[in-house]
Amino acid sequence: MATETLENVEGRDIGSGVSIIRERTDVDGSGPRLHQHPYRETFVIIRGRARFTIGDAEREGGAGEVLVVPAETPHKFAVIGPETYEAVHIHESDRFITEWLE
Image (cartoon, rainbow, N blue to C red; front, side, top):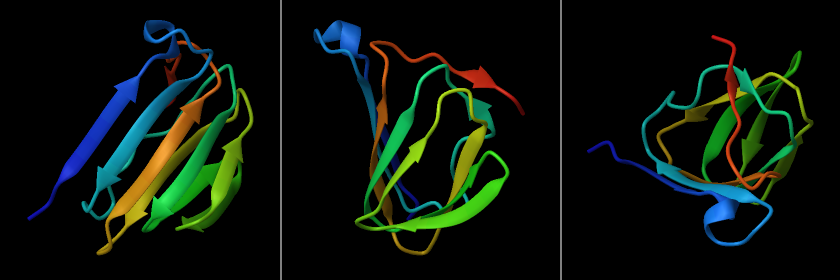
């Protein structure tokens, strides 16, 4: 059975300067389409794997890795199943600001 959980917390709601997405999914190929932010985004991968596109580069990220996407850099990722992907995505802003590119 495919499951997907997203939990978003905007820093401004809790008195913090960062916002967080906690993601957990076992849906192979799932992930956001190409987008960018005016701030850095840090991915802390707890388990599973995903293929990340960061600017012109592609790389696979797996459990225990931390990836940092610079501000104003187009990026996306797709979960590589069948293992569950679980990660914390840290946005260096007290609110989510996203420009969708596709």
